[in-house]
Image (cartoon, rainbow, N blue to C red; front, side, top):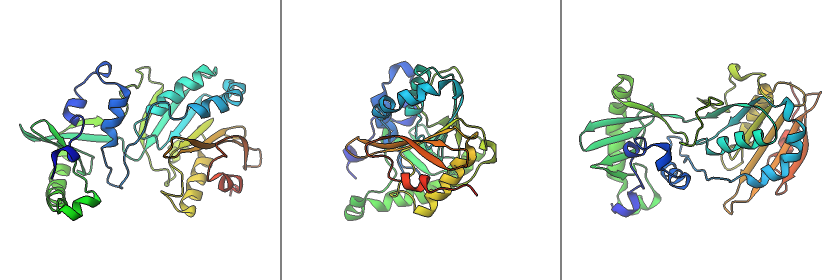
Length: 290
């Protein structure tokens, strides 16, 4: 297996030893972008990717700033854009606390030997190998099936995952979080692991605004799954007047999103659109509370 195609910019061991002042957001995004979760997704994000939505939605958000306190940001990846959301809402005059959720937040650094370190999730799924300081991807590409490089990668995962899981559960690892180093230390953003497809009672009826950015789209989920997510989001809203932002960034880095408001009858109304609106806008407009 060629080293160049498998090497990462920095190993997890080194990344988590760096202070927030010594790594820029572009390098941070490149590090996380090479991590493939066990559900097949990557932690892909970039700075300022939702700026055009902020410009378009600012007047409406500013009008409601006094009523925006508790915010839910779902499927946040590393939370880089969550930090930007916090700054945007505060610039509109709101004083907010944000709960940021993602399916994969917690991770572990496990040292097998002085020259072998594995970065994995709590179930022992390998996210990165570190061999004498050289970061190596553990996931399999299509090309690996042609070159037969998939065989050692697959064997390593099968052999290592139960051992990694055992070490994690025995406390023989360094626990870290896969979140941005730009997170402020003021406690206004709290990260929790959560699945948007499973309703969480501890989130029910709490939020004045919910944002679902780059998560609810037909490439990832079926229409029935998206309807389930919409029902869950509805249950998390505090009540009439609460806002929902659903948006997606395409490969050209263009955003298509809609700002919704919860009406008295429990349905949604579209207040503003960017890029023609969210691709699942109709599903929200057709939603009716049970």
